Image (tube, rainbow, N blue to C red; front, side, top):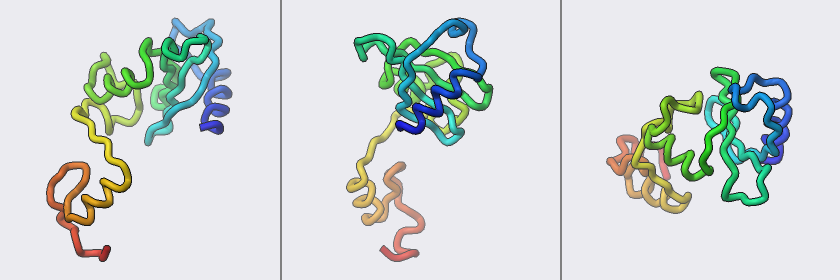
Length: 131
């Protein structure tokens, strides 16, 4: 994410910003991205990490926006579809509650058991391509 942080800092200098960010000088730290190459960052200007808002560079609309919540609340709100509109260009997570987290071992176990780990349904391709 160090490289993404540098990309975000560079993008901040020339990318359009929501009006409330016109004079902002955030300390950007990238923590994520999505399939449409959006950048998800903290504004780490406050000494208390619990107060760091999320800044998103949505490449689809070419603009930075601020979300006054932490990373976890931001992700929960995306999964619940709980913003006025999706803050990301990639809509694959928008309104996808309930979300599932699987570690690599559980995902492998489910595939080997012939189940799609993301749906819990039988995998129609199970056994067709070897183990």
